[in-house]
Image 1 (tube, rainbow, N blue to C red):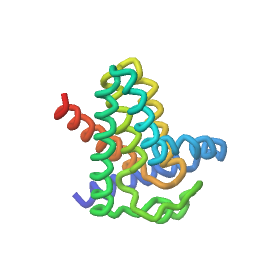
Image 2: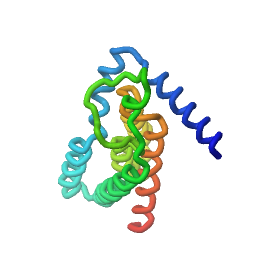
Image 3: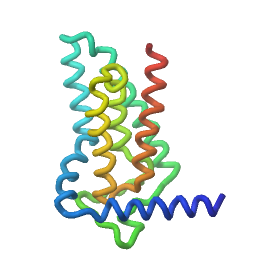
Image 4: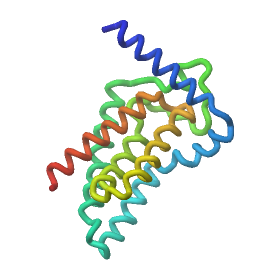
Length: 175
């Protein structure tokens, strides 16, 4: 088991370095994209969509599912971060490139990935025509976290997985 975890960490570090070492142009672009998964953007989007849904009732249930999913997934994400206490890659890895803000909390799982997927998965399920664009947007937010040096790839995947499980659970209970 120990060897397997060591191998996993080596693969995670190696993939991190490949993604994190991208050109400055990409880091600048992803410096903007990453904010789509931040608290300000996701909460604002939910409030705007909630107001919008009062006039277009066809999206009302989807918006409520997304809001509940965002809330529950973030509670779980905060609990997991406190339990796992994974050090961010820009602190631990000697050649990591940090672009932007230095986070002081732990990295596993990615909060931005958890948030963006929690908000978009209900829309992907209820409006399949939106799936491709929402999945690409959500994936770019996750990818941006590695490019910017604040998360390992496994942090991002774990955040997306947490959002998926939480959202599907909320949908199962509500529908």
